[in-house]
Image (cartoon, rainbow, N blue to C red):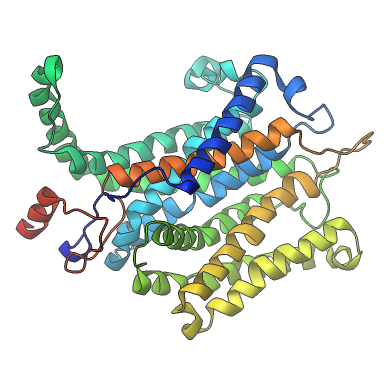
Length: 421
């Protein structure tokens, strides 16, 4: 990272009217979460043998994993393809991915019937190589570890030369400094290996989530059921990576009253029509080969939701972001990114796991319980709060060195290191 785009923690009050509301929502979600852990799925959810998954899988897990794709797509663009100007948004994307996957795991624990057995895949004697979920679980577990390893240099940068433990903990100051320096030197040599590993692992489990739907040909609506679901899941995750980075960056800039990285975000947006166009082309070819076009105009709930997903979440953003003048407008950029995130990929996952999925002989329909809704909204609120706390402690968000806005303080050690380099 160049000196004029150095990241630094943000100095602003953590508690505002908005964060107090989020704390209340997160607290309600925590109570619902604890209730589910204590009393089981039957007491807390409307899930049953016909509807084994609900909003915890479709939103907390499947959507959460897809929206965290900005971490590996941005890392690949900046580090593997060496597009240096995008380094300013790598750290926020990494943080979003790290927190996203962390809360995906927390949400998954709520959905697992025997959540206390989640450690089983860590032992080879309990592996099941024929299970798609085993592959997803292993990849998510390893990738989450890789994300935390990638975040270690940011932690080291924040505390290097600043360890000052009080009172009886003072003897640990020197060992702590030694450990920080060691981790910084060691990871500096091998960080590219972890970046590549993270990209590979992301591609593996993003596609494997689509494989889950392949095993249910009689239960998934023809507009969504296809043998190439793994490819479509991977392509949609890649396509939503950059819009999610733009969405998060603009929200953070507005929340902290900072100037957004206009030139970086506008340049990043130029890739989005290409990625969305490729995804849309594969969808069109797939529907044509499967002769599924008649279902588009059948007038059902499924056809309506499919049209919204395609037109509002894919076609409209392509049109907006294909115009260079609109890519320079932060308002247009935010609208287009929001459409991709909410009506494109998020709606796709909800459609796949809830709207398109129907058991063979349903005796009732599924609607989430108040506990399911509370947990999902509570986890979302908690994620936002943790993100706010982390960027106030660690150097994540970049700011121009010469025109650093109020709310930043300079990381002297990092700046000196940049000047020496």
